[in-house]
Image (cartoon, rainbow, N blue to C red; front, side, top):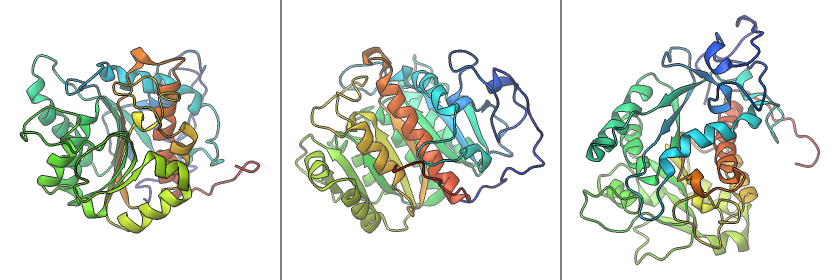
Length: 335
């Protein structure tokens, strides 16, 4: 990715102290905040729907009416934003740079979904994403249960054509249904049948629940990841996905419940937070056109560890895009 409007020295200097989410006059750079106070946006980015200068747009998708077990992921975007404040304080680790020196990133706020009309949710999310993608920006979405990825994929496929899927999860989410359910366990089979994702160039990582068919996906189960390691995962992803336009979706329950208890359908034996972050940071060279992190349900969280993991995953994805825009990682010690 190359920044559409890379920040320059001519950007207006700013000495905002606090509440930069509302007060900052620019999308580049950052200002002084108290980590324990101030208006909360994702990474303290400016809340705006004026996207003329944005390279990346972060948006919440607060929907969880398709969950099959514990509800509460509708509160995920709020929790992820709150957990992101510590990441906005210093240069990014282990990257060694400020991504906002290379990218203009906006927080667009949340997609409005009327709880009284759940059957309208998919269309609302798709239209919300259409509006953002029509501005020629990259979209980073905060869920919400995993069903929200389905309308997001529909919107991205309109712009980029059929997509490869890089899918981190405990579940394959390709169980069969009648094709019309609001279900966070079947939407990728639905997307496959609609031709918006290509399973032959897609990889599912961390899976540890049974499905009678792989539906043509390359599946790297959690035990395989533990045995072979993250470098082997990245080798497979690069081989299978190649340079196809890809969508990255990270269900936080890919992580073991020891690291991510705040989710609706936890499954034992998953990846550690360190493994998940190393994998996301290693996706260099992949042609990723959009991403989401989903299924954070803060009511079941402990000391915000699930929300912090999700915020860091999205933060590190943005850092990947900063590298594409010209940032040079400056390693600190043996990272």
